[in-house]
Image 1 (spheres, rainbow, N blue to C red):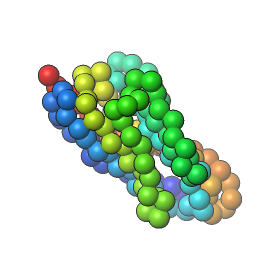
Image 2: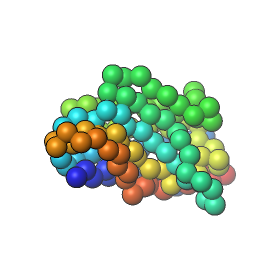
Image 3: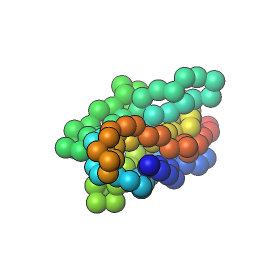
Image 4: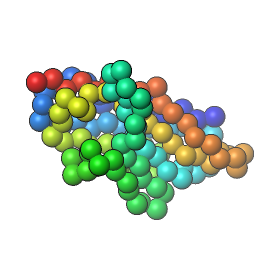
Length: 120
């Protein structure tokens, strides 16, 4: 199977920046897309951004212009550069990957999450 390990979360002040990383490892034949979701306190998990193997990206309206998703294909790693953070960005951030396994089956995997807290 596949493991996704997120890192880079923490406590920052309003207006600061953070960079999240998510590294995938395991029985990977190819990664079709990777993305980030988040779950604010007391709310449902929501979409943040995705990037496909070909490079196209997609963002939630709430983060457009502030967040940038990128990936290092050779390292099976996806990044989320978050700028101009505000309190509404406080959440547990989860990495997601659409993976074709070495068995050639295709499925989705989730990381365990990394907490981002933005204080005033």
